[in-house]
Amino acid sequence: MKFQWKEGNDAELLINGSEYFPDVFEAIRSARREILIETFIIFDDEVGQALKEALLEAAARQVRIEVTVDGYGTADLGDEYVAELTEAGVHMHIYDPQPRRLGVRTNLFRRLHRKIVVVDGEVAYISGINFGWDHLPEAYAMGKQDYGIRVRGPIVEDIRRTARALLLEHQAVRGLPETLAETPPVGQAAMRMAIRDNHRHRTDIEDHYLQAIRTARSRLVIANAYFFPSYRIWRELRNAARRGVEVVLILQGRPDMPWARMFSSSLYSYLLKDGIHIYEYKERPLHAKIAIADDEWATVGSSNLDPLSLSLNLEANLFIRDAKLNRKIHDHLMELIENSCHMVTPEAAERGRWWRAPLMFVSYHFLRHFPVSVGWQPGHTPRLEPLTPTPQAQKQDNEQELH
Image (cartoon, rainbow, N blue to C red; front, top):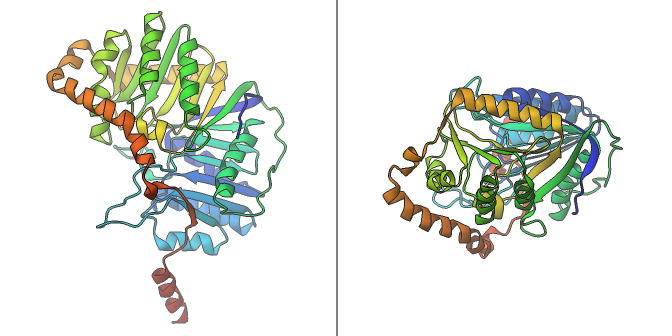
């Protein structure tokens, strides 16, 4: 697929699940013809139940519904949950399912990490937000800080094409029309869809980041959960800071995965010496994948700046030129820095450098080559299969009906 910049779109930033979930569920409840969903995780919790109820209501109205989940992230979704949806006519698909070995999930890499929702070809969402309680930070102490975006306009067609292509590529569906609705201009934002896959779009998201960093004139602000970038991104961030661009990184200070902070912090001394400002977000786990450059450019999506996202996973980001959205993101991130972050100082970054420097050298070069070695493994050739209840669960349901 080839994506171009499209004018005439409208964008609305959605902060955390508290804004994202009600908006998405309302769109689903208003659907008339079609709902396409891709997500890494669905939990059978309060959020997953709300999603299921909205989908069941839409299915009762004969809306076509295609839900695709990842075989690693959604491996534990219960049979009862799946059965309710499939029996109502919802088409469920699972990406790269793998058998467990000694109770351990083995499909660690090449995940479907995209978070996409498209309703009626008229409104779409791209985010880093999974369908689970852990994206409700206002309700739970360890709820993740994250972002999504709702869009309308011509860009919706490209987002729908992305979701449709995955289903068609794996021959998971038939009769899914190429276009569903006209998407006339509705706003002032220019947008470009970007995906990362293991075929024709291996570096698209990284390339868009690099272009924005290289052309930045005054400021770059990147909030990213798992920051261990390619050398190309690292070099361009350093070059931007050296030419006078204010480069600000907002990274995890209270990580959900401690190893992620360990890898990121091993880079701090080098980044600070180049004049890059680093802030650690301390209030809760940071799950963000969001950035702005200067006064117009922004990106929101699912891609971290780490080897998994940049070299193995299926990812989706929107790249946006819209001064209003840029300003809203900037103001929000500055408030985050003011109220919920602490600045990393050179002195703090130097502590323990005697043991972190060798770790950084070994881990950086290992992780840079790691995606290539994983790509050689035939066990990670991805596939899409129907997600259905296990035969044992179906047998039990049938026996219950008989009694």
